[in-house]
Image (cartoon, rainbow, N blue to C red; front, side, top):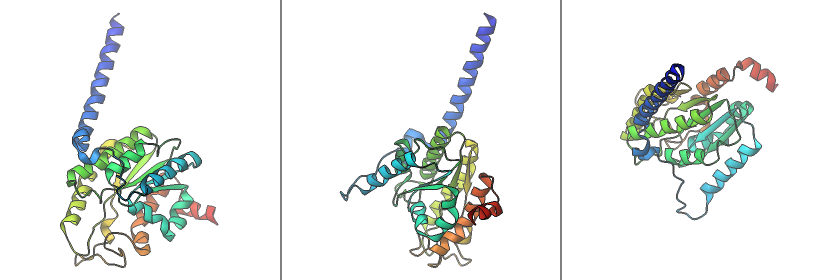
Length: 256
C-alpha cells in the first residue's frame, strides 16, 4: 500500500540519519583505526594479578551497590578515595569509585565493556582518564575518551557523563602539559555533540602565573595532594549537586 511504502521510506531515512551520526562520531573517536579506542585489559607483566582482582571487585560492587554517581578512570580517580574530600563530599552522594592507577583509555573501555556497568543505573558518571596514554597523540587520546563517553551514553541513556579535563603535569611547562591541554581543547568541541556529556576542566587553579605547579598541590607534579583535591574538585562537587538536583544546603541538612 502507498502508506506502507511511505513508512518504509521514512524508516530508511531515519536509519540513514542514525548511521550518518554514528559515522561522524566514529570519525571523531577514530574507532577501529584509533589505538586509543581499542578495548584491552592490562597485561599482567608483574604476575600478581592485581589489576584483574580490582576489576573483579568492581564487578561485584555493581551487584551489591546502587550508586547515584559512578567515578571511573585512572589513579586520579583511585586516589581521590584516600583523601578527606571523598568521605566529606562524594561518598555521601552514594558514589562508587572504579579507579585503577596506570589505566589508559583502552583499559577503562575494556573494564566498562566487561561487567563494570552491569546492574547499576547511576544518574551521573564521572570519567577521568587519558594522562597515561603515552603512546598516543592528543587526537587519539581525545578519541579514546570520546569512545568511552559514547559507550556510557549508549549503555546508560538516562545518565549524565562528566568528563574531567586532563590536568597539567610537571613542575615546569613541558610537551606532556601541552598534549593534555590539546586533548582538553578537542574534547571541548567534541563532547557536546553526544548530548549527555560535558567537559569539566579543573586545571585553572593549578598553574601559577610563572608557569609552575606547586608540590603543595601535586606532590610529585602529577598526582594531587589533599589540598590539591580540595582545590580542583570544588567545581565538580557543585556540578554533581546541581545534576542530582540538590542544593548544598539540603545536602548538608541531610548529613547533620
